[in-house]
Amino acid sequence: MNNIILVLKTIFPWLTVTDFWVIVFLYLIIDIALSIFVYNDSKSRGGHALSWAIWCFVLGGILPFLFYLIVRSPYTLDEINEEEAEKEVVELQKKYYEVQIAKEVQVCPVCGEEIKSDYMYCPYCFTQLKKKCPECGRLVDKDFKICPYCGHIFDEEKGVIE
Ligand SMILES: [Zn+2]
Ligand SMILES: [Zn+2]
Image (cartoon, rainbow, N blue to C red; front, side):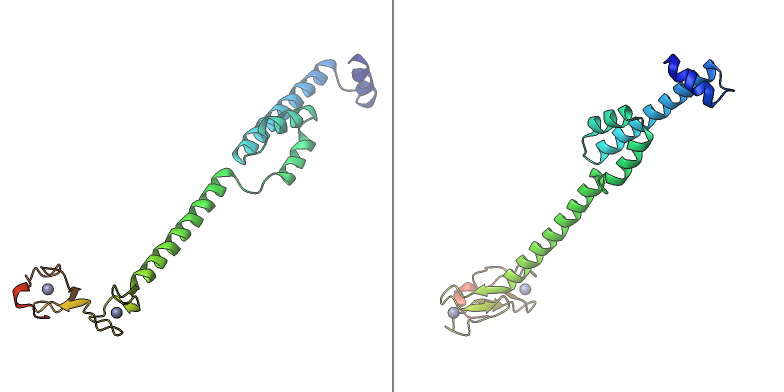
């Protein structure tokens, strides 16, 4: 250590021993501060935070710090999670639309041919699928005893296709 001080004294003759220790002290503070920053930053990005921090401290802070800034992961964990959440929402929306489309396409319970949800009769086997509510005019399942839209009670005894 004394040799270093002597060398420094020849280069910077105005430097006193106290100055030297002050410089060492300030440098250590910078080194520690940079290492702490690297630790927290690496942690938020899911890296090997402790290894990075130790490496940064041992190698003197500034240069490894700059190197770290270049090679660190461009996304924080929060950003990655956010992106994944967005992807999930898109996936759910996709599934929702698929279900909606699947609902539109139905098959006749008798002949199995493809029919639409608003068909009153199967166009392939003439099976009655729906009946029209005489009250509100909407199509309801042919076995319903009451119209779910307006409360009209179907007179089943008549056996009439309403
Ligand atoms: Zn049919
Ligand atoms: Zn009705």
